[in-house]
Image (cartoon, rainbow, N blue to C red; front, side, top):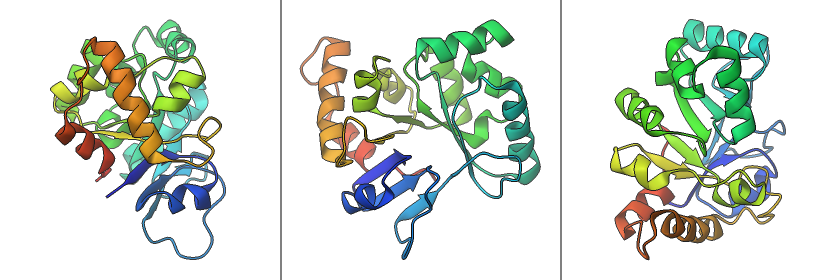
Amino acid sequence: MKTNAFCIADVNTAKSNCQSLIYCGDEMPSGTRDGITIFSPFRDNAVGDIYLTDLCDEDVFNAACDHIINSGVRAIVRTAYDLNEAGIVEAKYKLSPIMLLHKMGVLGSCTIAGGVCLDNDDLDLMAQEGVGLIVTPIASAAYGHGFAPVCAALRRGIKVGMGTFDGKYNKAHDIDRELEFLMLTANAEMRTEHALSAAELERIKNFDID
């Protein structure tokens, strides 16, 4: 099953190019929602599973943690997605974003989106807690953020998916294009032609947040 595991824009176009879509945007899909899983952008009156855009706003972050703990919901957290966001979090809390989520007791309820700045300790903790990673290959590269450590995550047994994020650099929300780009960036990172096996690519393509 072809899955777009993280989209925040143009839900109709995104859904037309995959069988399964995890949608985190403000524009709720009209008509049938078959094949669409919705994580609502977090607000104080949130109900259900949430999407948290980053960890930089302390008040919003604390409220989100309370909601996750008290309501037992799931969260997609876009974090460690670039050096600036990760640096702000580490300067404020003296912890990496992943370590902070763990300290707050919510990491196990989260799936991380972005993940360019994850280090080995972060990945080890994510593996320990069974936390998934959603990468955005084209957006991360095009915005100058870098490449997520997909191979290192997979070697630890972390479940990895991929999404088109805002679609700015992939307007068709074409998941096959994302997968092809992911293959190339993994090869570049690992300095080898076949960094990701066919089986690993198939698992990424068939990501299921549950």
